[in-house]
Length: 181
Image (cartoon, rainbow, N blue to C red):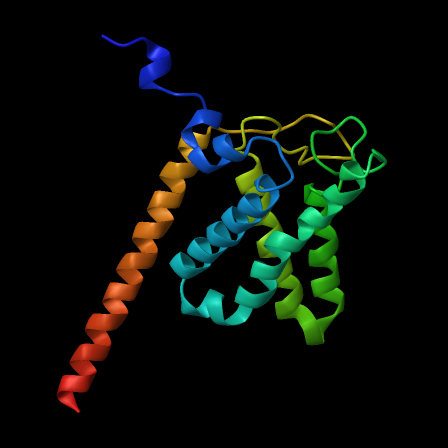
């Protein structure tokens, strides 16, 4: 029987692209952004057309643009990351600020809510990365929250199945309505 480490690989080794890229800015950074974009895309598809129509574009943009907060550290400055694995803007405080903006800026409420959704999905995916986690409750604590990469894959698999079933159901309905008309 193989050793346990072979049966249950570490979180880092379960993500082949991440393992190949390592901690490098290139190609690691672009691969990470593609993964964030695809994660957000699948979650939004699974949640349905009402969510998609209202929030897709701002959520997709926010799920990638938030990582610009890593640039200062890449340039050698730690003013956004002292004591935390990721920049301070990778916290629920950012989501709260955007939600307050949504409450105050009625004409752009859907845009703000889409941004909040994109940030939340981004932080959720970051929590599954083996090397750091997310200090969700900053500035109250620097504690980093994580969960296993395997759990991320299971949940994403469920979202993908839900999205596929929704697409299948819509295809069947449109085929039936086309046959009746």
